[in-house]
Amino acid sequence: MFSRRLFLLNLLFLLTACQPPTGSEAGKLTIGVVSYGEGERSLEQYSALKDYLATQLKAMIELEPVYNEVRALAQIRRRTWSLVFAPPGLAAIAISEEQYLPLLPLEGLRRVRSVIVVRDENPVQKLNDLAGKVIALGQPGSATGYYLPIYNLYGLTLAEVRFAPTPKTVLQWIDQQEVVAGALSLAEFERYRKDFSQTKFRILYTDLSTVPAGAILVGPTVERNQQEQIRKVLKSVSPSIAAAAGYIPSAKAPDYGHLIEVVKRVRPIAERIKEKPAPLHEMS
Image (cartoon, rainbow, N blue to C red; front, side, top):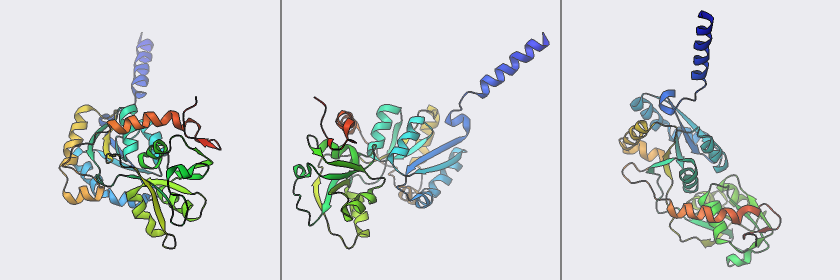
Protein backbone atom coordinates (compact mmCIF):
# COMPACT_ATOMS: atom_id res chain seq x y z
CA MET A 1 0.00 0.00 0.00
CA PHE A 2 2.78 2.38 0.96
CA SER A 3 4.65 1.68 -2.31
CA ARG A 4 1.51 2.24 -4.37
CA ARG A 5 0.82 5.55 -2.60
CA LEU A 6 4.44 6.65 -3.10
CA PHE A 7 4.20 5.76 -6.78
CA LEU A 8 1.02 7.85 -7.18
CA LEU A 9 2.56 10.83 -5.39
CA ASN A 10 5.64 10.69 -7.62
CA LEU A 11 3.44 10.42 -10.70
CA LEU A 12 1.40 13.46 -9.59
CA PHE A 13 4.60 15.43 -8.99
CA LEU A 14 5.92 14.62 -12.45
CA LEU A 15 2.66 15.58 -14.15
CA THR A 16 2.57 18.89 -12.28
CA ALA A 17 6.18 19.64 -13.11
CA CYS A 18 5.53 19.07 -16.80
CA GLN A 19 2.77 21.70 -17.00
CA PRO A 20 4.07 24.87 -18.74
CA PRO A 21 3.85 27.87 -16.41
CA THR A 22 1.80 30.87 -17.44
CA GLY A 23 3.34 34.33 -17.46
CA SER A 24 2.13 35.10 -13.94
CA GLU A 25 2.99 31.67 -12.52
CA ALA A 26 6.49 31.79 -13.93
CA GLY A 27 7.14 35.21 -12.34
CA LYS A 28 8.84 36.27 -15.56
CA LEU A 29 7.79 38.37 -18.53
CA THR A 30 9.71 38.35 -21.80
CA ILE A 31 9.53 41.43 -24.03
CA GLY A 32 10.20 40.86 -27.73
CA VAL A 33 11.38 43.61 -30.06
CA VAL A 34 12.50 43.72 -33.70
CA SER A 35 15.93 45.35 -33.61
CA TYR A 36 17.05 45.08 -37.29
CA GLY A 37 20.56 44.24 -36.09
CA GLU A 38 20.72 46.98 -33.46
CA GLY A 39 20.55 44.74 -30.43
CA GLU A 40 22.65 46.88 -28.08
CA ARG A 41 20.67 49.99 -28.97
CA SER A 42 17.44 48.12 -28.29
CA LEU A 43 18.65 47.05 -24.86
CA GLU A 44 19.47 50.66 -23.97
CA GLN A 45 16.23 52.01 -25.44
CA TYR A 46 14.05 49.80 -23.24
CA SER A 47 16.22 49.60 -20.12
CA ALA A 48 14.30 52.22 -18.11
CA LEU A 49 10.94 50.66 -19.01
CA LYS A 50 12.28 47.20 -18.15
CA ASP A 51 13.33 48.39 -14.68
CA TYR A 52 10.00 50.16 -14.11
CA LEU A 53 7.97 47.11 -15.11
CA ALA A 54 10.07 44.87 -12.87
CA THR A 55 9.47 47.15 -9.88
CA GLN A 56 5.76 47.73 -10.43
CA LEU A 57 4.85 44.17 -11.43
CA LYS A 58 7.29 42.49 -9.03
CA ALA A 59 8.39 40.21 -11.85
CA MET A 60 11.57 39.29 -13.64
CA ILE A 61 11.62 41.14 -17.00
CA GLU A 62 13.71 39.87 -19.90
CA LEU A 63 14.25 41.74 -23.15
CA GLU A 64 14.77 39.71 -26.31
CA PRO A 65 15.68 41.62 -29.48
CA VAL A 66 15.54 39.70 -32.77
CA TYR A 67 17.01 40.57 -36.14
CA ASN A 68 13.88 40.77 -38.29
CA GLU A 69 10.17 39.97 -38.63
CA VAL A 70 10.72 36.32 -39.58
CA ARG A 71 12.47 35.55 -36.30
CA ALA A 72 9.91 37.61 -34.39
CA LEU A 73 7.06 35.70 -36.03
CA ALA A 74 8.64 32.40 -34.98
CA GLN A 75 8.73 33.54 -31.34
CA ILE A 76 5.15 34.77 -31.52
CA ARG A 77 3.96 31.44 -32.92
CA ARG A 78 5.76 29.64 -30.10
CA ARG A 79 4.08 32.12 -27.72
CA THR A 80 7.35 32.63 -25.89
CA TRP A 81 6.94 36.42 -25.73
CA SER A 82 4.72 37.91 -23.02
CA LEU A 83 4.86 41.38 -24.59
CA VAL A 84 5.83 42.43 -28.11
CA PHE A 85 6.77 45.83 -29.48
CA ALA A 86 5.36 44.90 -32.87
CA PRO A 87 5.51 46.79 -36.17
CA PRO A 88 2.12 46.87 -37.93
CA GLY A 89 2.41 43.79 -40.17
CA LEU A 90 3.65 41.64 -37.33
CA ALA A 91 0.91 43.00 -35.08
CA ALA A 92 -1.78 42.12 -37.64
CA ILE A 93 -0.60 38.49 -37.82
CA ALA A 94 -0.13 38.11 -34.06
CA ILE A 95 -3.64 39.45 -33.38
CA SER A 96 -5.49 37.58 -36.13
CA GLU A 97 -3.68 34.23 -35.83
CA GLU A 98 -1.98 33.90 -32.45
CA GLN A 99 -4.45 35.51 -30.01
CA TYR A 100 -2.21 38.40 -28.97
CA LEU A 101 -4.04 41.55 -27.87
CA PRO A 102 -3.05 45.18 -28.62
CA LEU A 103 -2.53 47.38 -25.56
CA LEU A 104 -1.07 50.71 -26.70
CA PRO A 105 0.21 52.20 -29.98
CA LEU A 106 3.85 52.75 -30.87
CA GLU A 107 4.99 56.14 -32.10
CA GLY A 108 4.88 56.99 -35.79
CA LEU A 109 1.14 57.35 -36.41
CA ARG A 110 1.65 59.66 -39.39
CA ARG A 111 4.80 58.15 -40.85
CA VAL A 112 3.83 54.55 -41.54
CA ARG A 113 3.77 54.52 -45.34
CA SER A 114 5.06 51.89 -47.72
CA VAL A 115 7.33 53.19 -50.48
CA ILE A 116 9.09 51.59 -53.44
CA VAL A 117 12.45 53.19 -54.14
CA VAL A 118 14.86 53.26 -57.11
CA ARG A 119 18.11 55.02 -57.95
CA ASP A 120 17.31 58.49 -59.24
CA GLU A 121 18.92 57.92 -62.66
CA ASN A 122 16.95 54.73 -63.24
CA PRO A 123 14.55 55.14 -66.21
CA VAL A 124 11.74 53.28 -64.40
CA GLN A 125 8.81 55.68 -63.96
CA LYS A 126 5.84 53.57 -62.87
CA LEU A 127 5.14 50.25 -61.18
CA ASN A 128 4.40 48.42 -64.44
CA ASP A 129 7.96 49.26 -65.56
CA LEU A 130 9.21 46.82 -62.89
CA ALA A 131 7.92 43.83 -64.87
CA GLY A 132 10.84 41.53 -65.64
CA LYS A 133 13.10 43.32 -63.13
CA VAL A 134 14.80 42.18 -59.91
CA ILE A 135 13.38 43.86 -56.81
CA ALA A 136 13.95 43.68 -53.05
CA LEU A 137 11.25 43.17 -50.47
CA GLY A 138 11.41 42.97 -46.71
CA GLN A 139 10.71 39.87 -44.67
CA PRO A 140 7.28 38.20 -44.35
CA GLY A 141 5.68 39.93 -41.38
CA SER A 142 6.53 43.44 -42.59
CA ALA A 143 3.51 45.50 -43.67
CA THR A 144 5.51 48.18 -45.50
CA GLY A 145 8.29 45.97 -46.85
CA TYR A 146 6.34 42.85 -47.81
CA TYR A 147 2.53 42.77 -47.72
CA LEU A 148 1.67 46.20 -49.12
CA PRO A 149 4.23 46.19 -51.98
CA ILE A 150 3.11 42.72 -53.08
CA TYR A 151 -0.48 43.97 -52.97
CA ASN A 152 0.48 46.98 -55.10
CA LEU A 153 2.55 44.93 -57.58
CA TYR A 154 -0.26 42.45 -58.17
CA GLY A 155 -0.38 41.18 -61.75
CA LEU A 156 3.30 41.68 -62.56
CA THR A 157 5.84 38.95 -63.23
CA LEU A 158 9.25 39.88 -61.85
CA ALA A 159 12.59 38.42 -62.85
CA GLU A 160 13.37 37.74 -59.19
CA VAL A 161 12.38 38.84 -55.72
CA ARG A 162 15.11 39.10 -53.12
CA PHE A 163 14.30 39.31 -49.42
CA ALA A 164 16.35 41.82 -47.46
CA PRO A 165 17.01 40.96 -43.79
CA THR A 166 16.76 44.64 -42.78
CA PRO A 167 15.38 47.86 -44.33
CA LYS A 168 18.89 49.27 -44.62
CA THR A 169 19.87 46.26 -46.74
CA VAL A 170 17.14 47.20 -49.24
CA LEU A 171 18.87 50.54 -49.89
CA GLN A 172 22.28 48.86 -49.94
CA TRP A 173 21.18 46.50 -52.72
CA ILE A 174 19.69 49.39 -54.71
CA ASP A 175 22.87 51.41 -54.17
CA GLN A 176 25.03 48.52 -55.43
CA GLN A 177 22.58 47.93 -58.31
CA GLU A 178 21.94 44.35 -57.24
CA VAL A 179 18.23 45.13 -57.54
CA VAL A 180 16.33 47.75 -59.55
CA ALA A 181 13.89 48.70 -56.79
CA GLY A 182 13.11 47.93 -53.18
CA ALA A 183 10.30 48.35 -50.66
CA LEU A 184 10.45 49.72 -47.11
CA SER A 185 8.63 52.27 -44.99
CA LEU A 186 8.91 56.01 -45.62
CA ALA A 187 10.34 56.52 -42.12
CA GLU A 188 12.98 53.83 -42.69
CA PHE A 189 13.87 55.32 -46.06
CA GLU A 190 14.38 58.78 -44.55
CA ARG A 191 16.45 57.31 -41.75
CA TYR A 192 18.80 55.09 -43.74
CA ARG A 193 19.23 57.09 -46.96
CA LYS A 194 21.70 59.29 -45.05
CA ASP A 195 24.10 56.35 -44.93
CA PHE A 196 24.40 56.41 -48.75
CA SER A 197 25.56 59.97 -49.36
CA GLN A 198 27.01 59.16 -52.80
CA THR A 199 23.70 57.84 -54.16
CA LYS A 200 20.55 59.78 -54.92
CA PHE A 201 17.40 57.72 -54.46
CA ARG A 202 13.93 58.41 -55.82
CA ILE A 203 10.58 57.25 -54.49
CA LEU A 204 8.87 55.48 -57.37
CA TYR A 205 5.62 54.78 -55.55
CA THR A 206 4.02 55.68 -52.21
CA ASP A 207 1.16 53.61 -50.88
CA LEU A 208 -1.55 56.02 -49.75
CA SER A 209 -3.60 53.59 -47.68
CA THR A 210 -3.81 54.24 -43.98
CA VAL A 211 -1.40 51.94 -42.18
CA PRO A 212 -1.84 51.79 -38.41
CA ALA A 213 1.16 52.30 -36.20
CA GLY A 214 2.75 49.35 -34.50
CA ALA A 215 1.59 48.36 -31.05
CA ILE A 216 2.58 46.84 -27.76
CA LEU A 217 0.91 43.42 -27.73
CA VAL A 218 0.32 41.12 -24.79
CA GLY A 219 0.46 37.37 -25.31
CA PRO A 220 -2.22 34.74 -24.63
CA THR A 221 -0.10 33.01 -21.98
CA VAL A 222 -0.36 36.06 -19.71
CA GLU A 223 -3.23 35.69 -17.26
CA ARG A 224 -6.13 38.13 -17.89
CA ASN A 225 -5.81 40.03 -14.60
CA GLN A 226 -2.11 40.44 -15.18
CA GLN A 227 -2.80 41.72 -18.70
CA GLU A 228 -4.84 44.55 -17.25
CA GLN A 229 -2.20 45.22 -14.62
CA ILE A 230 0.45 45.47 -17.33
CA ARG A 231 -1.72 47.90 -19.28
CA LYS A 232 -2.10 50.15 -16.23
CA VAL A 233 1.63 50.10 -15.51
CA LEU A 234 2.49 50.91 -19.14
CA LYS A 235 0.08 53.86 -19.03
CA SER A 236 1.52 55.16 -15.75
CA VAL A 237 5.15 55.55 -16.84
CA SER A 238 6.81 58.94 -17.04
CA PRO A 239 6.80 60.67 -20.46
CA SER A 240 10.57 60.21 -20.73
CA ILE A 241 10.38 56.43 -20.26
CA ALA A 242 7.53 56.09 -22.76
CA ALA A 243 9.36 58.27 -25.31
CA ALA A 244 12.56 56.24 -24.96
CA ALA A 245 10.64 52.99 -25.52
CA GLY A 246 8.76 54.55 -28.44
CA TYR A 247 5.12 54.21 -27.44
CA ILE A 248 2.18 56.50 -26.58
CA PRO A 249 0.69 55.74 -23.14
CA SER A 250 -2.32 58.06 -23.56
CA ALA A 251 -3.65 56.74 -26.90
CA LYS A 252 -5.92 53.88 -27.89
CA ALA A 253 -4.55 50.73 -29.52
CA PRO A 254 -4.70 50.81 -33.36
CA ASP A 255 -7.35 49.04 -35.43
CA TYR A 256 -5.74 46.41 -37.66
CA GLY A 257 -8.89 45.29 -39.50
CA HIS A 258 -7.86 46.57 -42.95
CA LEU A 259 -4.27 45.38 -42.63
CA ILE A 260 -5.42 41.92 -41.57
CA GLU A 261 -7.49 41.77 -44.77
CA VAL A 262 -4.48 42.85 -46.85
CA VAL A 263 -2.37 40.06 -45.31
CA LYS A 264 -5.08 37.50 -46.12
CA ARG A 265 -5.34 38.67 -49.73
CA VAL A 266 -1.57 38.74 -50.28
CA ARG A 267 -0.85 35.23 -49.04
CA PRO A 268 -2.20 33.36 -52.09
CA ILE A 269 -0.46 35.88 -54.37
CA ALA A 270 2.87 35.27 -52.63
CA GLU A 271 2.78 31.47 -52.89
CA ARG A 272 5.15 31.46 -55.89
CA ILE A 273 7.16 34.54 -54.98
CA LYS A 274 10.45 32.64 -54.61
CA GLU A 275 10.31 31.29 -58.15
CA LYS A 276 12.41 32.77 -60.98
CA PRO A 277 10.64 34.48 -62.64
CA ALA A 278 8.23 35.37 -59.83
CA PRO A 279 4.57 35.76 -60.88
CA LEU A 280 2.74 38.05 -58.47
CA HIS A 281 -0.73 36.74 -59.16
CA GLU A 282 -2.84 33.81 -58.10
CA MET A 283 -2.67 30.59 -60.06
CA SER A 284 -5.53 30.28 -62.53
